[in-house]
Length: 570
Image (cartoon, rainbow, N blue to C red; front, side):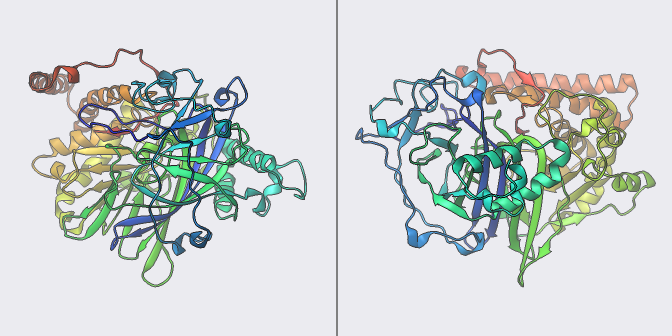
């Protein structure tokens, strides 16, 4: 059974069963093809399950319902179409049956895992409308549910992580003689729980595991909003393979991906995520509590620049003639919805004159290049945290780059480039250590639907901010910089509370901008009062022209934790 949603009335269903198992790391290996407007390749997911995800009964009963009340039908990819381990060799194919799944015997966890608060809209929350118990004991197997939409899934397989050279260091045996499911899961558990100071080693082993051969195809099926995967005979999340590879391709009409032309008329593609987050870019867990790290290798024609949410300033690696490869990684656990990518004929915009202060900031070492010196204890999950790095605490201006189509070079020089250092410095003077070690800023194509959007290590800005005086550009830049703290490093546990991040960022944009302008206290006060008045008048106008049901927020307690993150479309 397929959920039919009315975009004007219904919220997006969060289908992933994050109460059983969580993705801890994604490894993406993708090719960008502008002729077909398709991104294709593979993604390897590394899972961790635990007591908080296990049912008290020790087994998971998965049932499903179709219009004909038939048992679940899982589709195995045809053997002749099974791709190898090289993501550049497969071609997308479609044609899978639709059906809906649901979980029985679970308490409503919508307040804890970010699932839809309307029980009639999302499987995974008990609902007599969408859930039924067929009594078919064959279905008493663990079912992995991932958020997925507008994707062609070709194959799902278990990854033989035990085949990676040197991986025996994560087991109790000096030599791997008998390899079992339990041993593979033990290896993944040891890998995902490595301490933060071994992040580089961890990334290397993730990469090695992602290239390991498959060791068995998994049963899978898709519907409009999800991908469901199971392994015959596996009844609990603990027993389910903790490393799987999914071969897939996007669709040109996929709602997470925007194929368009830039202001110079050159083809480009970018992800904005706001309509359905990233489920049309890769299968994932989208509730904001499902935080993970990732690394990605993206191949495109040599004339294109690949920008992405990543802690490193990636440089292209030349492959065969006319093709380059870009690699990015993130070691701070983030929701999958914060992942962003933009591929186009971007040109890096550099200021005509650099001050000595700017040059010193560019030479500052990022936390990944320095020894971490712990000066305090944070309450989040362990990762290489900049807040615990003394060199990061004094870094007023983080290294940054600006990209845009070449035709906007003059506008960037006149309006944007000279504003970035004072805005970053102002943010540091108010909030202290920047949560992220570097920043890319991209002027996105004209069809971008808002003035800006913040993602880890990258900000999208509309070309509209380059027109007129520096006030519009400066305030919007300050707003998106503020989201590094509120919306990314700190975020709402539930998507319905995302307005909190916007509230903080809207307040701080005035504070940052006043500091960047070096206004006197009374001037800053006057400017903030004027903007508050304008916002109040705009709010009144929106209330007068909005339906009554759109004016009521869900009645729920505020739940903010440092380790809970959320995407921040502005």
